[in-house]
Amino acid sequence: MTGRFVTFEGIDGAGKSSHIEALAQWLRARGHEVLVTREPGGTPLAERLREVVLGEPMDTLTELLLVFAARRDHLAGQILPALSRGATVLCDRFTDATFAYQGAGRGFDTSRIEVLEQWVQEGRQPDLTLWFDLPAPVAAARRGAARAPDRFESEDEAFFARVHEGYEARARSHPGRFVRIDAAGAPDVVWQQVVSAAAARRWW
Ligand code: TYD
Image (cartoon, rainbow, N blue to C red; front, top):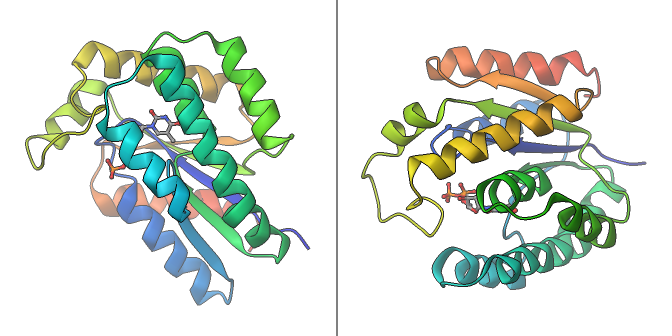
């Protein structure tokens, strides 16, 4: 028995977080075990690495390695055990974020990211990726000044435009797994797209 692995992606401010919780409720109401988790993070060690990655200045290779170190711990300690007991895993960001942020955003060589992906994931990929697509300027306006920005949130609009392009490229190259959610609408309009994408898979 293998559960389904669903990831949520999009630039900061795209508004995916509330929909992750709503989809977890929708699945639990159908009697499924659901693990809601996030990256970087999801285990005590990976949460510590998250604090470092989001808070400490570092070069791009260090950032990339820490993100994958956190991912390895998360996969081994949480995601793979949950999938093998048949649970659905809903993960706020995964490796597509690394291609978008460290690859497209920071300009890091994609082929090196692919090597680390292979090492760390050993072929394991999400079954479904919901990509909350929102233009970078709209996302920036939504982020506003609500809280102290972390190392990524304090990047400029050009960085987020590159990250957005990075997600577009990932969606194009993985059409079977990616579903584009138009994140520009009202929350209930966005939710309708999320629930339709889930229901269309007929997994639950
Ligand atoms: P995010 O998941 O958006 O959490 P919050 O809503 O609490 O800010 O923040 C995580 C940040 O980490 C986000 O800016 C993207 C970044 N990130 C990467 O750069 N690479 C990665 O591989 C992952 C998973 C996240």
